[in-house]
Image 1 (tube, helix red, strand yellow):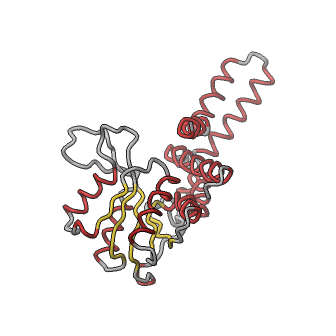
Image 2: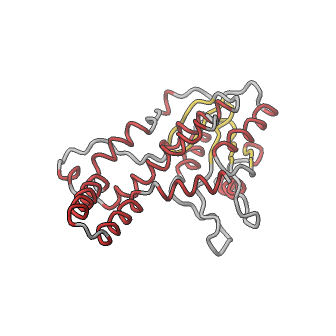
Image 3: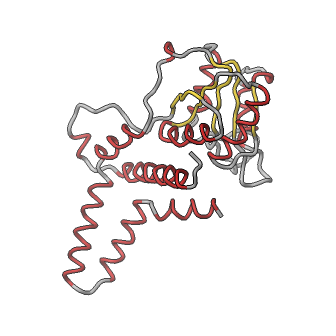
Length: 252
């Protein structure tokens, strides 16, 4: 039920859906004054959602900032949240990475530099016939030369709440006095930290996979319409709704 509700809210909140519904309303409505107002609203939303400056500023304020490696202490466990594998891609003789692969690559970097001693990967799969994401990502780390003894797999979590709850059990059992570093996408970090705190785990953040960019110097880059901005608005709204829903349900 929670999964269906979250996905329904996600699609209803997509800017592309709003624009399509407004465009349909403009074509359907017969009253000239209403048609004119809807057309103006459609144009305003189109200008807003295609403007890269506005959404970049919002993302810069929402995403937690990157942390310099030289400022990091040593951690017993680096916790990697999954959601970065194309699990149904064929042939199933390799791991197909997608957006967010920095979660694993930066964990590997941290491990190689001795900042984290163990890598814990959390994430299952809604399709029980497919290998859980955590298991697939473990294979990538093994190919990269990470010893199996330094990789811990949590293969059951299907969302951020379960990531935190199932990981908390492993940490309390095997690293009860440990120091933990949470590794996930910058836009997702606020919700992830809240879920881990609620599960009784205090972890330091290590944001990766940034959507926002430093301020560009050329003003044309900030006023030219950009179709990618619509997709970025979708990411931002989806995460904001997720954070609010989790807060209401006392998951944070």
